[in-house]
Image 1 (cartoon, rainbow, N blue to C red):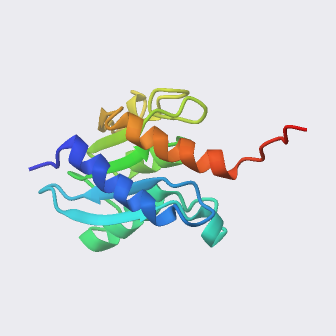
Image 2 (image 1 turned 135 degrees about the horizontal axis):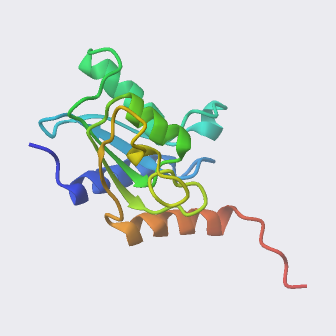
Length: 158
């Protein structure tokens, strides 16, 4: 039985908390198996690892594929993430055959699941996952807003 969207995104929010104290943008991702069991979770580690591909989604999908032991296929799995995936992550989840994507906040600047691009619904590709977006959107957006409020250079009032 697939995991409920709000439960899935709540788990991704918990995963994002792991990045909150570090230099990385607090984005979390969790992969659930076809039966709803959590297979893997991760948070962004691009800065921490010095790896441009260390997005939460990529790390969670890699770990889940290892856990399943079926090579690279994540058929029947749900990927939950706090923010709409970028082009790299959207492409990877299509190639991994993720069956369902559930995400929180929309990302109008880089989102590739409907905001800026729509990679996952491109009919030219051989796999198109089910997509549920905007789940716990306000909570997910607040996490990002709080992070950027404390990490941006704020001009002085002089």
